[in-house]
Structure formats: C-alpha cells, structure tokens
Amino acid sequence: MIHFFKKPVSHLALPEKFTYPFHYTPHPLCVLAAEEVKAYIASRKEWQEELASGKMFGVLIVQTDNGITNNEENQIGYLAAFSGNLDGKNLHPYFVPPVYDLLQPEGFFKIEEEQISAINIRIRELENSSSYLDSKEKWKIETEQAKAVLNQAKAELKMAKEAREIRRQSSPELSGEEQASLIRESQYQKAEYKRLEKKWKKRLEELEMEVRHFDIEIERLKTERKERSAALQRKLFEQFRMLNAQGEVKDLYTIFEQTVQKVPPAGAGECALPKLLQYAYLHQLKPLAMAEFWWGDSPKNEIRHHGYYYPSCKGKCEPILQHMLQGLEVDENPLLNPVHEEEELEIVFEDEWLLVVNKPAGMLSVPGKAEDRDSVYHRLKKKYPEATGPMIVHRLDMATSGLLLVAKTKEVHQDLQAQFANRSIKKRYVAVLDGAIIKTEKETKPIAEKAILLAKETVSTKKTAKAERTGNTGRIELPLCLNPLDRPRQMVSREHGKEAITEYQIISESERITSESENTFNESNRIDESERSINESRKYTRIIFYPLTGRTHQLRVHAAHPEGLGCPILGDELYGKKADRLYLHAEYIEFRHPIYGDILCIQKEADFHKNMIKP
Picture 1: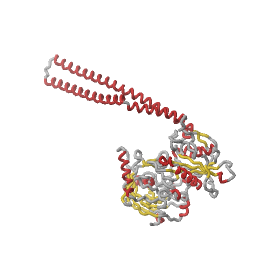
Picture 2: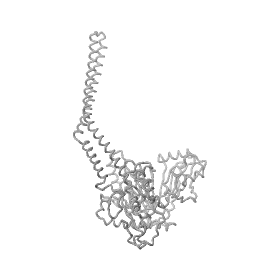
Picture 3: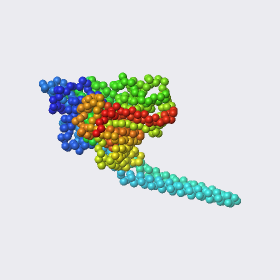
Picture 4: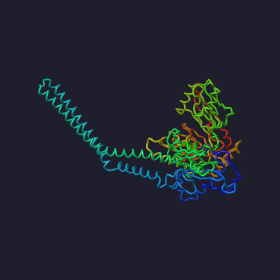
C-alpha cells in the first residue's frame, strides 16, 4: 500500500514536525505525492463521471521503520486515501482501506441497513395506501360536513329562540298552556341538537379510529426505525477504534463524548486523514507530513476548487485528530503566533469621542475565546483605560487589513452600531482576485440566470440568490451561514442563510504583483504554480467591493463561490490558496459623527494597492 516516489527526493529536507492539519502550507514531498496521486486518478476513466461532482483526497508522507531496502531513499514514501467511498466501494488497491468497512456485504451494517430500509418501504406503503388516504379524506370531508350541519342547526335554534321571544313580547297575555308549549318546544329543539351533535361525534370518532389505526402503525414503525438507527449508529461508531502514535485506542463515541455535540456526526472517521493515520499506525509507519486536496467541481453550498489544498474539517475531524496526533510532534498553529506584537497600531483619525485605526492583516479585532491573544481591543483598552463600552464597533477578519471604527464611550458605540444596523455607514474594500474573471457572453447573464432559476425552484420562504453584472460593475446576493461541520468556513444556504449583498467594480487586471516581499510571496506559492486551475498564465484582478451587509466572510465567499465571481481573493486560505497575506483591505469608511453630526470620510490605501502592475 505504501508508494515510493517515481522521482528522486533525496534533495528535499524532511519536515521537522508533523503538519498542523487545520492551517498549513503543503510540504514539497506532499506536493510530489499529490501529483502522482492526481495522475493516477486521471488515468481511471471509469471514475471521472463520479469524481466530476467533487471529492477530497489526501496524502500522508511516511517513513518506514527499518527501511525496505538498502536504498535510503526508499525509506520515504507516501500513502493515499479518499474521503467517504469511491465507485460504491471502500476498498481500492491504490488507496488505504477504511478504518471500518461499513460496505462489506456480510457485515452487520449492511444487514441492519437493509432491515431499516424495509421499514422505510413499509412506512411509505402505509402512508401512500389507498385505504389510508381514502380514510383521511373521508374524515376530512365529513368533519367539514359535520361542522356545517351543526352550525346550521345552531342557527335554526337561535332563530327559533328569537321567534319565541317575539311571540312572548307581542302576546303578553299568553296562557299557562301556551307558555308551557314554548318551553317544551325549546327543550325539544335543544335535545334534538344534542342528539345530532352526538350522532356526528360518534361518526367522526369512527372515521378517526380508522385513520388512527394507520397512524399508530406508522408511528410504531418510525419509532422502531429511530431506535434501530440510533443503535446501528452507535454500534458502527464503536467499530471505529482510532489509534494514535502512543498506541492508545479510542472509539468515536468515546472521542466525541467530550465535545459539544456529544455524538459523532454522520461520516465521522471516513475522511482521508484519519484513514491515513490509522493505516500508518497499524503498519508501523512514521507519519511525517500530510496534505488534502480537492478533485472535481465545487459542492453546491461550499467552496472548493479543483486541485487546491485544504485543511482538515473541524466538525468531523478535529476531535478525532486531537486523539490521533498524540505522540507526534506537531507544528504550532500559525494563527497563534503574534505577528504584530512589536508594531505600533496606526491611528488614522482620532478625537475625544472615537478613533479609526488601520488594522494590520494577521491581527484579531477582538480576542475571542483566547482572552490573552493580541488584538485591536487589547491594544486600545490598554491605551485608553478610561474608555467605556465594548469600544470595537464592527469587526474585520483576522486576515483582512484596513479601517476599523472604535468608540471611546458606550453611548458613541451605541450610536455607531445603530448606523451600521440601518446601513447608513458606507464601506469600501479593495482586493486582488487570484485570477481573471472570465468576460464572455455566457458570464454576463449566466450567473444571474442560473441563480434566479435556482431561486424560482425554492419556496417563497427561502432566501433568493443572484449575481448580476453589467460591464465592470455588478451585484451579488448570496445568503450565508456558518458551515457547522467546518468552522469557521461560511456556506451559501438559501434555507438557513442570512441576506448578504455585495456590489463591486472591477478596476484592472495584471499579469503579476510586485512588492518588497515578492520573494517571500513567490516562495510561499512555489508549490501552487503547478496547480493553477483558474488561470494558467497567473493573472490577477484588482476589484473594489461595496458590502451592503456585514456577514462573516461575506466578500471572501462572494468572490470565490461559483454563483458569485467564481474567483477567490488572492491569499485566501479558506476559500482559495495561501499567499504572503490575504489581499483584502478595508480602505474607506463614511459615517455620521455621533456628537457633532458631521459626515466623516476616512480613507487608507492598501499596502498592496501600489504594487499592481497595470496591463
């Protein structure tokens, strides 16, 4: 199962520590391994239709314990894996096997799955049976009929009562016998109504029992299905006995007991990296580095690009990998390194009530869960200890640079937040896209028409999605929400997403970017050049964004999503590819001063703005 490189690799230094799987630059050995895996995938023509819809693959660089041959180079090889199953199977000779093969024909999972499927079939048969549907319809019709008949009877009772009252008032000298007759008439009519009401009640109860007979059986089957599914899921996850480098074993239920969700999500343990590590530990192979890459089209709601490298997912894999990586020396999370600790925070505007700072890329706006991490809030709270309220009026992503509005008092903070809420504050961002937006006849209508068509197919309660473009300007409306299984990534969801609107203007295109750190930039992207799936000639697009809403990662998702611009922002590790930084900068903000009422317009040009070479 271990593969040895077709090309010499002795000139490549081995990694000092294992890859931190949630934020990494692929090691050159991983890139070479991925290239060989991609060539193999491309050679399997029978898989291409399935793979066109997209799948994650992974490679794990490993070192043999004692060496397979006397050739030192042969001690370094790689393993390959895919997430989920492929071609309806879990077992393929080129790839490592699953931790547990739930698709084996004689296994408990397939047998019990068939039993649950049989229950599903029986439920559908009952729900669609003519006897059940006829009984429901008859019950519904006669319920309405009973309501109408009883309402009519009530109306007649009322009319009769009114007639008796009129007779009493118009004939005050009624005899005792006549008075008694009116009372008997009233009593009889009321009794008749009660008999009628009782008759209909009995009839409807009979019809309801006919329907309930089916409902009870359907409910019993659904309860059985739920109980059997839960038992099957538990038994299945108990088969996933995950190893770590220390030889310790934990099943998935034990691993996820310490998490918020308590229960493993569907598909846990079936991603590429857990498979790779499990095989390496079972066969005494030392893991050195990892990388995962996407093959095929992007999923409907998420953002994936063919050939791009991606970190492991958080929802399914993070708890598992926290266990499986124990015993390995792993790289530090680079996001925890304070890159601006020695730098002074630039203040662009300040008065006694508020200030506007230029947040550098790589610094948090607020500390979040890790209270001791460097952030704009920490810096300013220290600088202005007398300030009241939350101070930070809005946030920028950690990777985004630019203007951040800060209030020195609680009252000013509330006023500015109200301006954000009613969308009277105007913001402008400048960005560099990693590619050229294709300008074809198909592109000017397509995004809009496709999105509008999708929107028409949904019910009215769902958010619409569309992207419209005229010349170099356009508007994107894609509703966004958190991807619960892959935090902090956001996803497009017409059902659960919140309204997100971005207007944009394309400024220029360029063949390259120059900067003082160009060598660093090129070095950080050296491994990506062979993977360019959008623009083989490496073009960049400078663009201006005008966000009309302020959703998390809004501009990044609207740029990268196929129904948006289909072109990620340069350096976007979450939705595109890594570079020396995320090329997104909040360069302009306009707001009304909460105290003086003046309109303030603050601008700060991006550091990378001047480095775009015009075509």
